[in-house]
Amino acid sequence: MDSFVAVDLEMTGLKVKSDRILEIGAVKAENGRMEETFQIFVNPHRSLDETIIRLTGITDEMVSSAPDPEEAIGTFLSFAGDLPLLGHNLMFDYSFLKQAAVNCGYLFERKGVDTLKIARKVLEEPESKSLDSLCAFFHIQRDRCHRAFDDAEAACRLFFLLKERYGQTEPELFVPQPLMFRVKKQGKITPAQKRDLNHLFIYHRIENHVDVENMTRSEASRMINEIYVKYGRVSEQEERLHV
Image 1 (cartoon, rainbow, N blue to C red):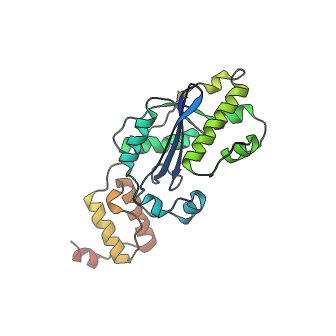
Image 2: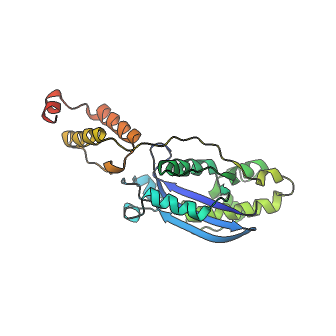
Image 3: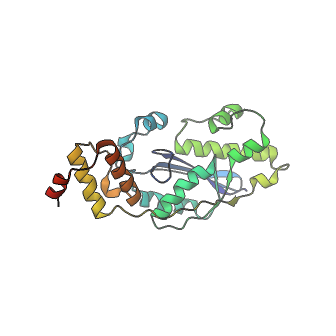
């Protein structure tokens, strides 16, 4: 594989169904050379956890005015074209990309190569095959760890290094394979769910850190159930007052 797009994401968390993309970083390689780069923030329409802010350095201010997912995903797909994808633990990032793409009405089926799988196959050291460990082991420089573009570029450099050393003896590891991940389009929040959530926020005096208008139906249902468990339901008298 000489031409591909190395990609990495930063997200609000680890769950494809309920977390959102914060940043997409990518490097386009053609004929064995890095040629173009890509970076875009994505508005998650929710406040970020302190853990994510500490890990990535991405703040609410950096993403609050960023493009919505539809625009960001469309821009990335235009950049990537039909090229295969490359990444470290690629299926993790691909799952988020595909869910976001399907939600936005895009078809998204790709082939790809995973540098994590290659490293686990051909390397005895280092013991950890994380991108951080491999970059340290092979002296691959990164300006910022856990930022999408820097990690995508690092994965690209790692791929070139591994291919140079093991491409002749393990050629099948460097051939793009279909990326198999099934998703369903997540529907938009319903008017009834908006009403129920806003009513619950007011009734239980809950400070809301999520843009209700941009929630999915499943996210809204999950949040409503979590509020019921933590705070309880609205009393019958209050229900009658809001009918």
